[in-house]
Image 1 (cartoon, helix red, strand yellow):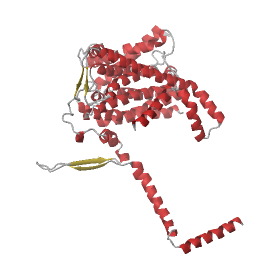
Image 2 (cartoon, chains in turn red, orange):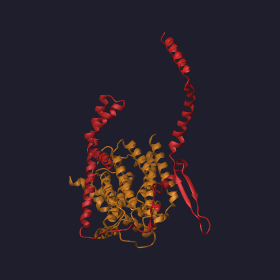
Image 3 (spheres, each protein chain N blue to C red):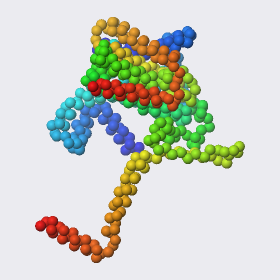
Image 4 (cartoon, each protein chain N blue to C red):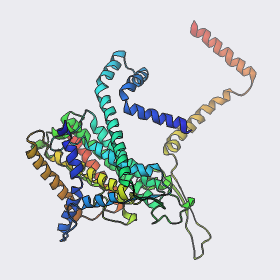
Length: 191
Length: 301
């Protein structure tokens, strides 16, 4: 899994560093899909040359600055103690996998802000009494596009199309009748 | 050749001065003497002399965070003109500028999440949430400037804006400057969006994300934040008073005074206002976004 993902990430990096080399190849593929003539495609490639060169140069400058800063930090830390310790303890002491900061926690604030669009569902049983038996909290943000748009559309379409199933009932005589009707219909259509 | 890099040199050397000027302004409003103007320089030197402590749960992402975020703002600074002079510019660099700032933020957020701390995760969540509102505002402003100047280069947009001194464009300029000022406060974690002085994790945004960094890494983060502030204030200064070419000393003095003025205004805002409640911040940013949108409609006339 790591090798294919790494190779794709590497390709992205190379494309960012030398976009001039890759643009004609990718542009040809894009031109095949888009309604572009050969002339249009050539014009786009010629016009985008300076821009792509600058993007490549910018990427190289960025990597150079990153490498320079890495060397500076290494030089600064030379001969000094580089220690390993635990994460800053405030709010982190005795952490367990059950208390981890999850993806839904990360998305909680934006989901709250866009709650009218996000369809967030919360199931909460708060602890009750002095000796609570248990508590439970569960939140989920179901896929809005799938649940509100795609699924209802598919279900409705299936309901409509299922009416055609009456034609598929397994009686061979009626299938022969359909064939006869269509052959006659085709015969008249061709006439 | 060497003179081309003077704006970058000025940015790298003068950037830590601006937080000091803001703190001086705040101290003056509070009737205090305040920390020295060069306090951040002293802090950076002190941090660079220290060793480093890394959490055992962190990976290479945590160590790469400060370097990538500092590199991204340094490269973004190449596109921003200082007194009309730019180091590097090409048509479309405005997109690269916005995404370089985004890249820096992305790595800071990743480094915060890499620690596994819930508090730093909360800060990261808040940072990206507020950027949902700040980034469209920035892009709308760039669209307006691109339309007015007929250019996609940040330096041309800022040095050739025919807004200043034209009464018919005064309203448009005011709306753009206000929106960009709010974005500047949000992007640099200033009051009323965030308080760089607070050390209570529950109310922090940017500061809580960098709690686990120390020594040279923290120095890189503080230095990067000061460059980002410098870059945003330089854009605001150019927008208010575009300048191109001319005598380097004269334009440099005018530009420096404008930069100081905008910085002092930020200090005044921080002195006069309290930090907004976390839930109110998106409203402020939405308001800035809507104002920028109105400005875009006006620019379409």
